Figure 1 (cartoon, rainbow, N blue to C red):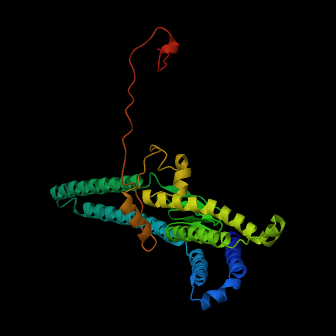
Figure 2: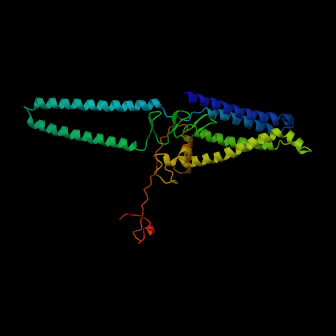
Figure 3: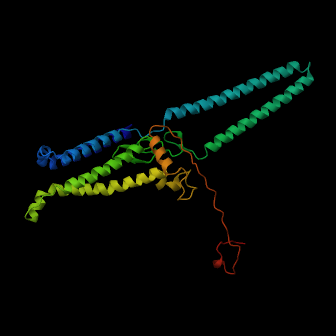
Length: 335
């Protein structure tokens, strides 16, 4: 709970910082020409103000969107149901065996042949039940081979689920923890995060244009520096934002088009369901168009992710030629 509380504080601080930065820019550059622009029917400044305010509001909306945490209660209920079903199956089998034994004892002196046939049928049915139970257990084991168990949340993680230490929860299709949003970027808000990056890039470029055109010429450098000092500070901040947010936007566009996450790309060798694949192989990719469609639809619909492609292990072809010296051999051997 403390971690979530801290994340909410960071969220409010980041949103407050962005709002103040926008308002300072607007208050610094627009009052001198805003009235004249309205009188002259030049609404470029007003249009820029509206765009900035819309982007700020969009940031607030994106910030409060849930990333899609893995529900804890549902998984616990499913495990309890499975345990109850197994216990009920065991009691039913015991009762059936007791009834069969009673029937056999009562009818053993009257119909021996019938009892023998019934015993054979019972054995065949029990063998069928055992085989079906073995098949079900094998199917369960096959489905849970690549699943990861979270010892913090005490749940089995579906494919692409990541535990966030900052949030203290497992996030479906977890990408990363974002400080500016104040929560994780996951299956339910990755689309909004990408839109925030795109709008943020437009916002930063627009700010660069506004600041750069706001410089005023003076006769001397000292007077120019003194008069444009705030512009220089804001311009440096904006350049830093552009350098950070524009490449990040292109990165997440690439991740969306290839159906990857930042966590899967950076920690591929540590993820159980990806570490055996080649580094350039993307098991969840279904083509650019379908990847982008799933990236959009996963925000509004629950999607269970499974690798749709598998690759065979490469065949190692060894050179059977041996040389006199050990150092000349490509593959070393003690024999």
